[in-house]
Image 1 (cartoon, helix red, strand yellow):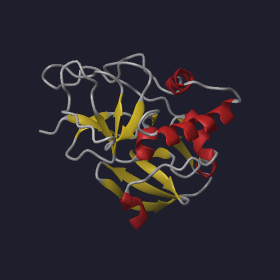
Image 2 (cartoon, one colour):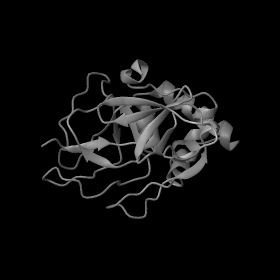
Image 3 (spheres, one colour):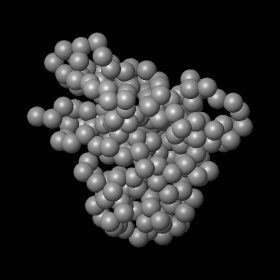
Length: 207
């Protein structure tokens, strides 16, 4: 049985085979049996490279943070994470600079974490739910994740690509004036509007 350590665009942590292209951290979420007991432990949700300075980690070790994995960068952003300031220094600086533009203020990492946290319903650590907002499809930048027909989809080139744990499956055309439920936090959508371009799973380019 695979460990429960894969994160969906809605922020849910599920058990599936395969780790994805990015990893992340919300603190220590597991017990001595490698079972998750909570959905988060602190506000600074980051996503990281899976290969950095040849570091090796055994998963879900006692008293160590729970290693989480994402299909791609767009998935991590939709789930409410931001770039890590260590292993992704340049991406972190780019994201931070754009968020400072949207907020018209200088921001430290704790400021960004508080802002992103305000876009999440995190009062229940055992049953995390994500705050969503609605808008016209045409108002969203590429790489935003939405909920459509009961499933997560990525906006790409004006189309919707259906998300799965192994890649993007089906491309769907949708009218610009359709009102959609947005999974990506509002603060992150504003960063995407200014030109932040997440790395997408290779399957997105085949549809």
